[in-house]
Image (cartoon, rainbow, N blue to C red; front, side):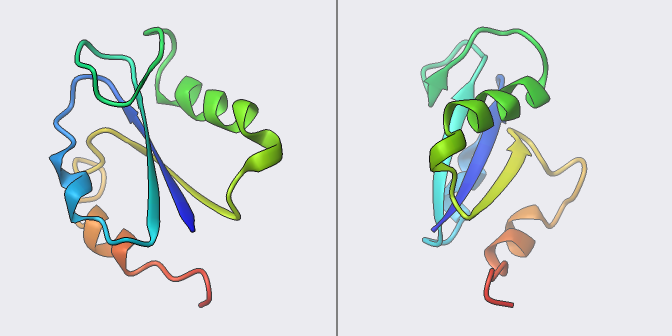
Length: 89
């Protein structure tokens, strides 16, 4: 299984529904809604990634993808590319 860690603030993360079943989706939320695990709004996404790594250090997945709640301004084909990811290749 591949973990995908999403650092969410107030973004719409409906795109997560388009991920294939190879992913264990973990959402950390610093925003105002009730989606995912609530974190204090301190730091940026890197604070969320460090939180995840430190709290799961002895139980990390072999593969972990870290991303923002809205990765598309950085890479418009994010879901297509991530769905094609195969750790066996």
